Image (cartoon, rainbow over all chains, first blue to last red; front, side, top):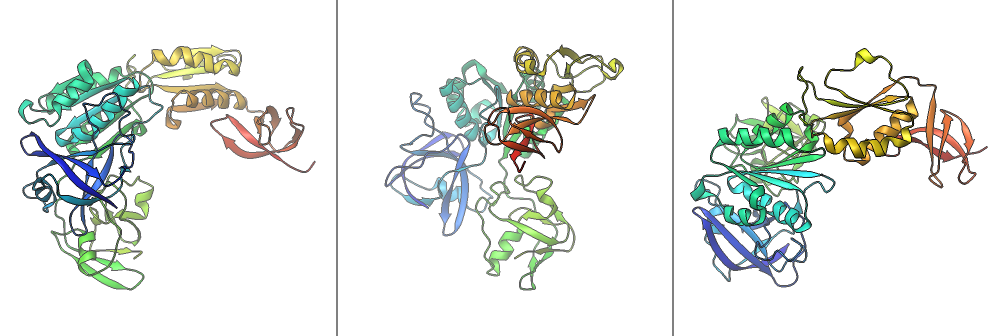
Length: 313
Length: 143
């Protein structure tokens, strides 16, 4: 864990707070699209994408950084993490994980198509800074309403005429179809934003005959929607844990004192992935592939598809 | 170039090593290239791939060793495994062998024991295939 101090706060657009964080010593480097977990209450972490400083275009983005910068969208009805982080002031201290890479660019790609919506612009901004520094071929498609687009100015400065903005999903569809059908050989697409935007890119890419391995995504999702209550059976002890409709399996396990590794709580990082011994699962994560879903599940977002699921815990 | 043909299939760059057989098995939108020698696959792909778009596929047609060489050249130029398919026309059980000792290449038949032309090691032709090298592993064995 890192001990960080808030060096500066800013409000790049309504509802978004940017934090500049420093450490007591040198900070670990990070690749584009990496995130850190910020501890907003004891044991409670939210993960946020690291964005390099748009003012230091002479430095390799993410290499030996002097500061970490994150942007936090306020979720008034969330669990409290964004509200706590919005309340931070310069000088405040907080603990953080070291950077984790979950959404890196494919280094062998000939061209990168970057798609962002809402606060999903933050990892895309990191990708753009990286590609601009190294002279890589890229384009950015942004769904944004002018007044509420976080970092749109930074993105515009870095991407220049390689940035195309769509005010809504319909306009984005046209931009996507053109970009995906004219992308040169060996392109890769990266989407960060709400699940609907990610699904749209996946559908358009398939229509353009892109194989799935060229389509990458990092979802920015609010709390998982509620589901039906079910029972988790812990195979090693035979213990049964009731999971309510409004709580996650991970929360239910924590409530009864069963330790399980966890980090992002959004089905992204894979930390809480656990072997399933029996029972069908409604998978809601974005980290497991189809093979892995045969016998594993992400405890933080996925649920039993029936009345119970048996876990190797 | 757009990645769809009129029938909605992904378009294909078809690389034939040798002569074109079964011409009726190709589609209207296919881009057909014929090579005399699979060793020229890299140069061909360097010229052809920048003219294509993402969404195209590569189909290699020829003998087993030839299609493996074309596939390896495509993978080395950014193709993903699911974008490259092969059609083996005349598989006389010939395989290209990659020496695990000195990395020299040779031709042999599955199950052969051969002397590596590079280092002289006696190599057993295994069934361990590398798609990157377009060859099977030749492992040091007992003569």
